[in-house]
Image 1 (tube, rainbow, N blue to C red):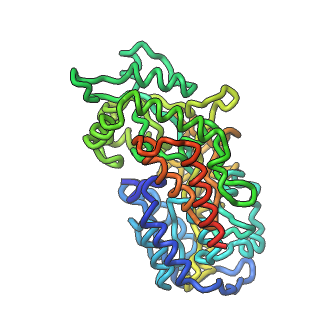
Image 2: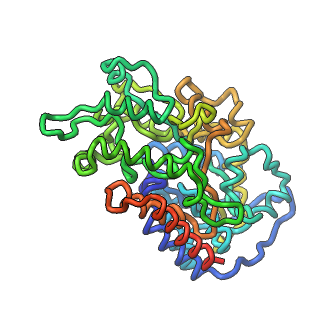
Image 3: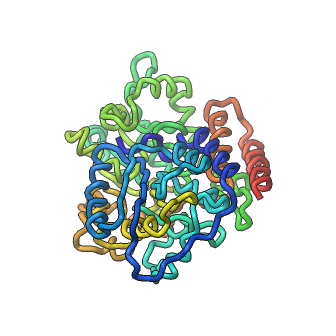
Amino acid sequence: MRRLLNRRTALVVGLAAALALATACTPAEAPKPIATPGVEPTGAVELWHFFTDREAKALDETLAKFKAKYPKVTLTVKGGQDDAKVTTAIGAGTGPDVAISYSTDIVGKFCAAGAWVDLNPYLQRDGVDLNSIAAVARSYTEFRGKRCAMPFLADAYGFYFNKAMFAEAGLTEAPKTLAELSDMAKKLTKRSADGTIERAGFLPLFGFYENSPSHFAPMVGAKWLNDDGTSAIGTDPAWKELLTWQKELVDWYGYDKLEKFRASLGDEWSADNAFHKGKIAMAVDGEWRMAFLKDQAPDVEFGVAPLPVNKAERAGAGYITGNVIGVSRTARNPEAAWALIKFLTTETDTIVDLSNGIRNVPTTTAALTSPRLTADPLFKVFLDIFANPNSGTTPPSGIGPGYQETFSEFLQGWQSGTKKDLAAGLADVDVRVDKMIKLAG
């Protein structure tokens, strides 16, 4: 299983609490000694990461090459660690030297609180060209001029569809617009005589698997934050367009019927995933799903495409995020910790090996164009999404994922019908988010 927590939709309570603890317990960042360039790092360094099973094995194979390159560094690896555990440990002063997170949402908080150290001195000393890293990955690894993280591969979210179900319904290609998505979802849905959903063409509920406002936002180009860091959710009409479309599809199915159907579906990260089992015909998901399908459901014939969008000029869009890696403020050996991060995030062969093994998107120009990169036609769809200017990400904030969590709370009431005034609800989200941002300073 790749992720112990859903990368976006299950961050909410545990990570927010851990971030609060890290902020409260972590004093201002102390300056770290910077060694002379070219001096070989020595000593012990401990790495925590969240990968398990197949992906952990791929990482271990790459780390073996680090050990061979730096024989004077003793590397200890602790896998299967979720973000809440990492942030709590850092706040308590017992965190690892280096940690890999599945959430870009921690970056703003970690940079602001000093939980991860500023890497700029190391980058400048070693002459690392940040322009070699894709702009979107640069954007989610720094906050207010402090680069406390580096991108450890990226994720591009696109659209999956079951080819056999499409052929059965007379469909030949993925929906390109939201209107087409609704039409196809209805055509592909199967119900029993009493209206019970047996197969959903598309399950539109927020909170289901990878269905989150962050992953859907590029469909309409919705904006999260204003230039001054305050919430733009209530004033950007794109959110109203997206949520109106989503609610209309929810109402066509019937909210209660959707909830009953969702309750019958298997775990996202198991072989019982609803797309694997043919319970849903279309889904929003990341590039890693292809490796899971190959491993857990090899008989499923599927296609991939960019997200459906509201306007033709937004074609090719998807959601971009990624894993991030940083040096803990409590690192006992920051120089060796930096050597590990530099090896994993700037060396082309390393990045390509990781991408080929884990099946995530490389973040540097050299790795993206490397002849060693395994890029079959399906994987190339996600490489194109990653490079598409219409794709978007969630911006770093001093409140971490707080603005997304607040929005998601409203969306639960919106899709269930308990909150009917969309404009008022979105305006209230702005008020609540802006209050949090003001308190965070």
